[in-house]
Structure formats: structure tokens, C-alpha cells
Image 1: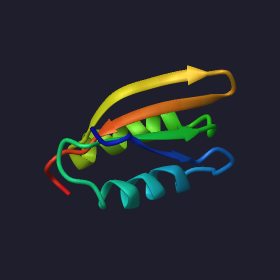
Image 2: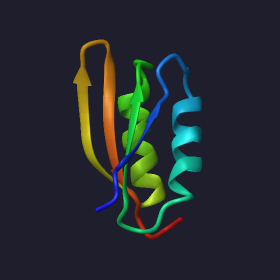
Image 3: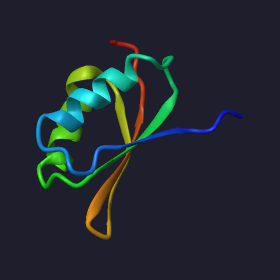
Length: 78
């Protein structure tokens, strides 16, 4: 089993977390899961819309301390 890749986008403001997530997901195969950390207050809505628009599944979206944790399953559209 491969270890899930994690990217820390804390300190970045919209739209950078989503743009960097898009770039990271482009390197994955369909069905792979990736974790992102972000502290931009707009990121929950941004990540949700991004996943819907790009065909990915937002498997986890949690608030932890002063940041958010996202697990995204790569879809087939990109």
C-alpha cells in the first residue's frame, strides 16, 4: 500500500490552494487519494466547488485547530 501524499497549503490565499491542488491531482491516477492542508477561510467552499467542477470526490473536509484538512479522491475527468 502506498502512503498518501500530503500537501501543506497553509498561509496561501485564494485561489492558490485550489490551483496547487489541481496541479497535484494532475499527477495522480484515477481513484488515488491526496491530502491537503489549508487555512484560507474560503478554502472549504473553494475545495467543494473545485471537486464538483473537476469530477473529483471530496472524501474529507474537516476543521482541525486553525486549519482545514481535505482528502480528495481523483476523478476521471482530468
